[in-house]
Image 1 (cartoon, rainbow, N blue to C red):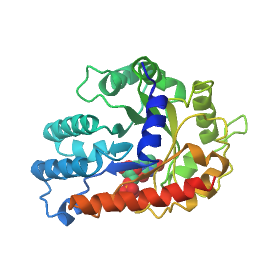
Image 2 (image 1 turned 180 degrees about the horizontal axis):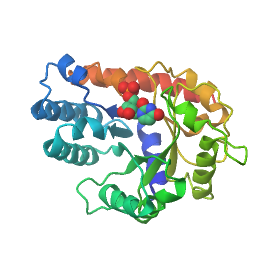
Image 3 (image 1 turned 30 degrees about the vertical axis):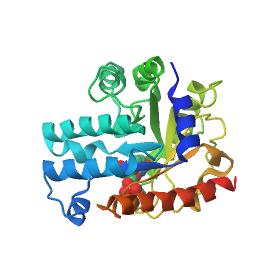
Image 4 (image 1 turned 45 degrees about the horizontal axis):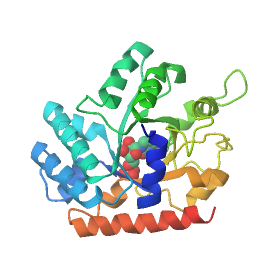
Length: 278
Ligand SMILES: O=c1ccn([C@@H]2O[C@H](COP(=O)(O)O)[C@@H](O)[C@H]2O)c(=O)[nH]1
């Protein structure tokens, strides 16, 4: 079975280094001329799949915008995941799960067991109950060729107070997360299946990402103010591992499918240029 790291490596080689989020914000539904209800959500998601699913390496549905419609929203999320996988994109579900280990097992079954209707290629996870508590996710991911992206240095300004706090051994909280994920990826080829989330907005924080040997998801581009040019400052020598991620910047070009594709092509060209200078 091919690992998530290998599948991601191939997808990026074929389609380019880009993740596009499906974030059906109420404001975007209105901008697309859709109602803020399940039918509007369904139309939005289907259009995004049509525009992106056959050309973008990784598509990242934001679970919260589906969950807010309850069971019918989750049904649309399931269908969106299926459609994206059929179209050939890797699906990274942005759901930021984390809990005590025994409950993390259930989250792992929900998102990484191939028999689950919500099974995706990878999900985002929160390490604030301890990276070790996420072990059941790492184990199930490894067993089924899935991936996990763990929050390290998030793009929002509030994250720094927690993530850059210094622990007893002198490392920041974020550096301990980075180091634990680096251990999990040690020796993996062509790249490990366990990624980190590091925002494009954070500037040069002095964290050492050199041993991660896994993908670095970089949200915060576009709507949050980060630019492709900022990636060099944030990631330095780790630029080749970066997977830039945009949601509103691309989605605001919709609902026209050609316009969505053009917006994705534009940000991909920016990212290729920024990453090529490494
Ligand atoms: O540090 C983080 C982690 C996750 N996100 C998520 O990414 C998208 C960003 O959307 P934009 O429209 O491109 O701002 C959104 O789903 C966040 O929940 C993040 O922004 N920062």
